[in-house]
Image (tube, rainbow, N blue to C red; front, side, top):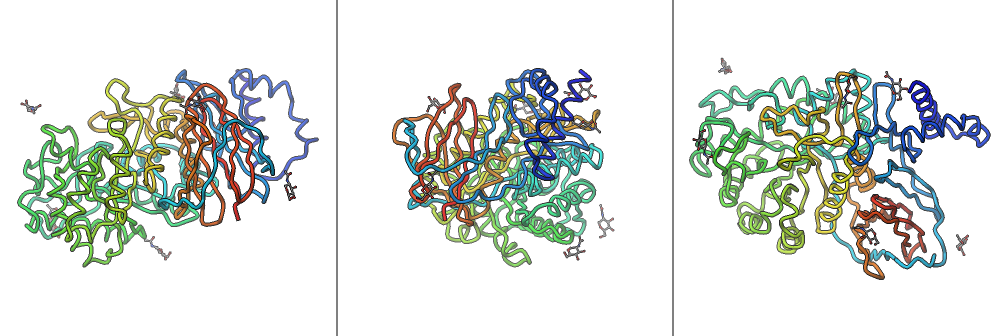
Length: 545
Ligand SMILES: *[C@@H]1O[C@H](CO)[C@@H](O)[C@H](O)[C@H]1NC(C)=O
Ligand SMILES: *[C@@H]1O[C@H](CO)[C@@H](O)[C@H](O)[C@H]1NC(C)=O
Ligand SMILES: *[C@@H]1O[C@H](CO)[C@@H](O)[C@H](O)[C@H]1NC(C)=O
Ligand SMILES: *[C@@H]1O[C@H](CO)[C@@H](O)[C@H](O)[C@H]1NC(C)=O
Ligand SMILES: *[C@@H]1O[C@H](CO)[C@@H](O)[C@H](O)[C@H]1NC(C)=O
Ligand SMILES: *[C@@H]1O[C@H](CO)[C@@H](O)[C@H](O)[C@H]1NC(C)=O
Ligand SMILES: CC(=O)N[C@H]1CO[C@H](CO)[C@@H](O)[C@@H]1O
């Protein structure tokens, strides 16, 4: 075991130097003891060369283990030279974002399967990808040593990492908190005189968001969602269970709840954190369910429409945050197009609204064509945006599965499906959870792309982490989806985008156990030879102009 870990270290240190310090000659490469390399590969079953320190927990694939001094990074990606393309592969067999530079061909490769890029077919533009800085995520990050915290934040936010551009920030507590609170728990405080951010904001989330922003190459797009209003504004007098705002739109409870949003934005702004968007509230339909087990505030579509028209819209418009985007729904996409029809058909409400937030939990229940595309075609002026998704939420399959490949495929499938149906971005749920899938005060444990083991000061990057990198690292804001067509039937799932810098990005998912050779035909560059390996996600990048 000792030999193996020494080998592992020398192997990965070597790879790290190769990727990040300077080019290494073939001569120096030979000096890496071959026996050691072979032993490492044999011991771990690891076939990649990207610097992942693999660990197999028997869930189908591996996690990459990181600590305060070592973590593999996706790296800074420079555009390929003209006539060449990058390919990046992550697969069940253990490749993690493995990178290759190859030649574009002038003539067909003869592959039976051809994907043609049609850049004259233009669709939606991307906003971004990211995850949520919940109380649980913040607690988990801060449970690590300072070095490991930095290493973890770099994974998501630095130019060498996933380059996340969106962070969802819960307004006060949700199930992924260790206690129940809002920012205005003094009963009858309609003037919000006692409004104050919580220690969770001031000591954990805000400092972490500032560190994330400082390492991010671009301004982060922060998105705020509230789970429940203060209990004293609600019909049930509690943060959990079935309850709505007391009174009606335009009344003092509704107005106070809108002013609470403005106060939240004011307070975060004092810490240099300005928001791109707010949602009208997390999962409004949860608060319509009897005995709902955690924080929720019920709205029907009609109630949400009237609250936006009479309270939230006007309060934001008169505030210093008038430019902020307002996203409705923030709930299951299966509620579309009904929810959008009710809210956006209203001339008073619709003028304050910019987009529609969707969650993934019931995605298999309703075809994307019906929920997403229909909504887009009915209301093309309002963008669709994924505000929450996570693995490990189904009854019987709750919590963390270290190295689970099926969950990685589900992420890739859902992201591609959303993107092919007008969705402009995808926000993962908790950025980081612990080994149990929490903390969560109601024990609603789920999975996350990064799991910390605080006893050993390490964190594990799940396959889902790399899946997100395949999208987030390339699909920057304003990238525009273009057409892709197949010359023959194929079950490969794919989507293509043209970025502002003139490069084309194609992502391909193969959920079968066969390698699938194919070629890409892009009339502006030529033929790109490729193989979609069994159980893999592949991202191809080339420069079009
Ligand atoms: C971190 O991980 C690397 C690679 O596995 C290992 O060589 C190193 O000893 C670890 N550092 C600590 C502080 O555990
Ligand atoms: C393709 O054609 C161009 C121009 O004719 C030539 O410069 C290039 O080398 C060719 N590339 C390959 C891979 O054959
Ligand atoms: C509310 O704030 C006022 C001062 O603004 C303070 O005197 C009072 O104690 C606070 N009440 C509670 C319950 O925190
Ligand atoms: C906010 O940013 C400005 C300029 O970047 C800086 O001078 C100021 O100290 C920051 N304030 C806080 C509270 O971080
Ligand atoms: C809700 O909870 C109450 C109190 O625990 C219980 O009496 C009631 O049966 C529950 N209702 C439903 C629909 O589960
Ligand atoms: C977490 O770390 C502890 C202490 O090193 C170790 O005993 C335990 O096996 C680790 N758990 C996992 C799931 O890796
Ligand atoms: C489901 C899926 O995407 N798997 C496919 C991988 O590629 C081959 C060839 O297109 C298909 O046969 C699989 O079904």
